[in-house]
Image (tube, rainbow, N blue to C red; front, side, top):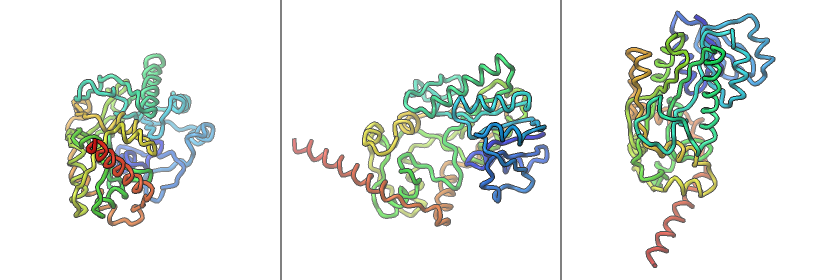
Length: 340
């Protein structure tokens, strides 16, 4: 069987690329700009083109057909419409990577199933993904376009340490604050439940949907069954760093209102909500699927990887200073109230 992965080298998609490359049943093609070709497993074929250049892609795909096309970098209905034009009649299955952030916020029930309504007034990214899903289901019902929708939640690998409040340059500055003995900003009181899924676990379930006729016209989320609090996440990171966990709790609304960073979508529209994913549907579609990387194991692996790769240790003094100002402002407000 032939698979075409559009992108194929990101946090989620690279794990899928590697797993497919190990499976003799699949012939794997990647369509992208070719900037990470040296990292590809042996046997993976590259089609070098920018998916945003529709005519160039059409020429590159001339005469080719696939059993499964997976687009990891489509975010808007316009991009999905482009894929429909490119791949209608050229693939037996089109898998769209949506997002679990599309589920209704604020949550009415912390247990999330695929039938949980899709509605997120806090994050344009999520609303765009919902619009993509709506378009694909219309195309499936009216034209028979063989769409499958997959909704990842917080999927990560050893290259990314998951934190909820960080600057534009990644998690390193949060880790550095821990190592320097400084408090780290944590939304709410750190007790909201969250689900972390390691990318190799995600890949095994995803591959089970590829070429699966029962997945056509269906939507699935793929996550771990494990739920942890943000306090537990940060505490594991601190412990692996040999540092104390010193949280400074701040409401999500205040973090967003503080202005410098966009936290309304990522917190109020996502991470600040306690959610528990019911994975019954993906387990029925992919018998035997179970995540094997616990949250603490994956977190420690990611911390060790960052510590051993200095090029990933990107400092963010602007974010560090902003954290200090937020803490100072809230401490000053406490003093003002206490003085009455």
